[in-house]
Image (tube, rainbow over all chains, first blue to last red; front, side, top):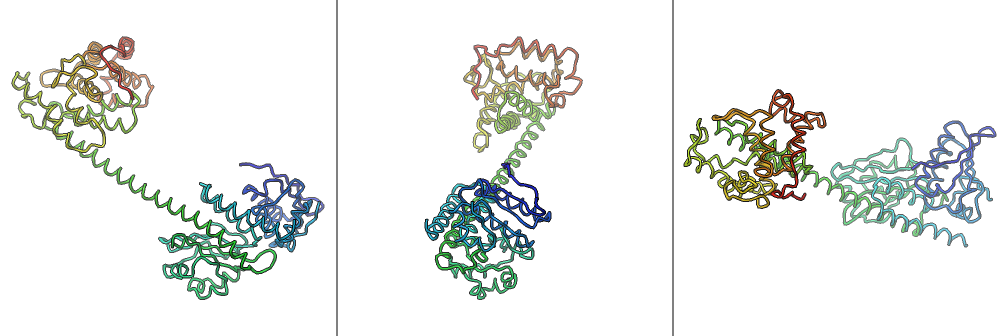
Length: 106
Length: 420
């Protein structure tokens, strides 16, 4: 299945923005991780994952975000989760994702 | 919502999802990938892998990994003694610090520790080791507590069931393939035996050498034009090969007589369909009606055939096909007392006897088969091979076949059109 993954090209120097959308919670969300790995391989040192259009994050989504974190940590890149709603921010906090990525609430 | 409650819901949702995933996914690798995400995501586990145990290959093969270094092996050797160790340990998660007692981990300890694996969970289903789950640290940095261990164990059990099901399926497929090959071998042996019989029958009659094989092939061509299934086509071909098996008991001098035989000899020869039936009946043919084709291949639609003088719908359909193929070959080959007839004469004869001796729709099928081959409607060259190119491509044969096809009424009252 093809998905329409919205990615903004690196801007402000070496920052890329990836929109999690609803795909994050499905196996198709693996593409988000691949896209982030590609950006990092292309020299991007800061990844912004936007949760603007993502209401909830399930276990598949968490796993994919851990993949993004894993990719970034290997390249000393920074990961920021932006536009995160309060419930999701609490979940990230309780699972320990906040230790590896900065979380900016909506 | 309190944070602990939210975390609990998140984890149990993953457990429910993994159960559904294993129960409903038919794509094994998709199931493993999704289950692996659910497992890691349930407790935010940073790294890990799922490996399947192959008892035949003495290997652990990793089906999914995350966060492990490039030096982590994609497969690891494991032997029955290791398997016994895991079975004895049971399904509970094993902390790496305790895993050192396993000979298996003594071999892989450096690489396991280097990659930050903290927990190993054997997947055991019906007392069989089906694989291992290896898990690294949690994103929170906290150790796996007993509740965490119970959750990952439950999830690993689900994944283990999925792998076990896949193993069963693979075993079933392997057995089915084995049976298919055996059946194919038996079918080939049967076909070889049938051809040997046909050769033995034809050997007895020096003037009609190759007759049984040709009748088999014409029967096959007619059935193919009728749109029969491959299995039924094979059956009618076999019936054609064996239709004259009863001739094995007829005196050679009668069969090879250079002149027309007398009434007594004719009566002797005319026993061959019934004798053929008796020979073929005790054999368990993979196709039905082969003995009946032998018995009734000299019956005619108008009831003037032998041995029983059956009429139209009383005659088994397969016997009608063999009858047409037999007569067609008799007309198109040289006999001791008669030269082969021209293609024009043969087509006229078929048309004239359609509805009397031959089933009209079968004559149509035979003519259509020839016409298709001549007009390029089919890539087949069977008629050319059997009859010879010059015989088949004689001038005027195409319009003649077309006329015959227009002139034959497939629904002659004498003929019952067989239902497929």
